[in-house]
Image 1 (cartoon, rainbow, N blue to C red):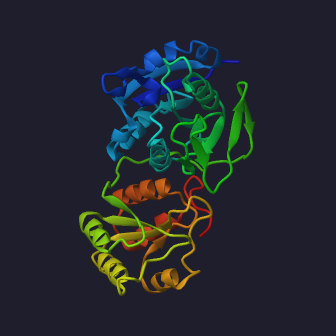
Image 2: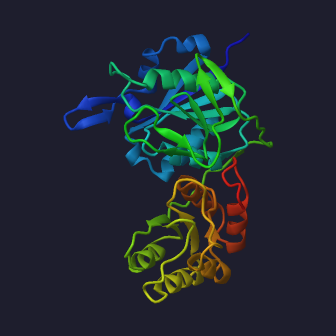
Amino acid sequence: MKKKRILLIGTGGTIASEMGENGLEPELTSKQLLRYIPDIFDICEAECIQLFSLDSTNIQPGHWVRIASAIQERFYEYDGFVISHGTDTMAYTAAALSYLVQNSPKPIILTGAQKPIGFETTDSKQNLRDAFTVASSNLPGVMLVFNSKIIMGTRARKTRSKSFEAFSSINYPLLGLVRDGRIIRYIHWEVPSPVRFYDTVDPKVALLKLVPGIGCGVAEYLLSQNNALIIESFGVGGLPSYHAGDYYETVKRGLAAGKTVVMTTQVENEGSDLSVYHVGSSIKQNLPILEAYDMTTEAVVAKLMWILGQTADRTQVAELFYTPVARDILAV
């Protein structure tokens, strides 16, 4: 059987890093990465390009668009794509690509490593092998492959800062595992057609994590500087009332100025439900805010940037926000 043709897109990250005077820095190209794993060519016909060499801390929304554009330009030349990426913002990029490249019948896989590929002890080589294995399969859409796990691009989160088991699937089951070069698939899904590409995002989306005692001035400033504000509240969600309703009034003024406000939770699992407590139901009933429910914060950020890149109309923003993309929201 003819081997599949897979494109490796290099972006930097720990996987491609070498030790410099001030710590690890991305130095290796995608071509150099492939030299460490020659057995990849037993899996597929692998080719590569290098888009940039960045610590993922420096990845910006514009880089998401460049990755999506690189895939679009070569979409019909290859059977699948692997993106080597730093782990710290990989979940954001995975979510963003899920919105920028929708309904892909071909696998688009993000992977990376907690240890550089040149280190004696490293997870780089196995993660790349697993990523190429999934990229050579018939699994559709954007996925993150790491430490044998296959995770939906809109459901990934980095939950460990050092361990090889760095990523978890939040509020959604694992899609499968890679074991000894074989895919154990847990969930079967199909994507509608045709594939759709987008090339515009609005980076003016801010995130505010509430802490006890925080005043509403921070929210007011973020609303003045951005087109959307995501508020990570406590528990199932709500706004504090210890400033005599100031948070409520701040959000109300922001909405009146045409801003988008999304309420979510800083609790990792099970999502928000503003209807449970008065601190949440009062704003849900009286203000045109959006609620994230079971979406990850990474997906909310990326989805809002994508939506606001397409429209500023409040009705259309709400409709797009609550329309599931790549199983990003289930609890509406």
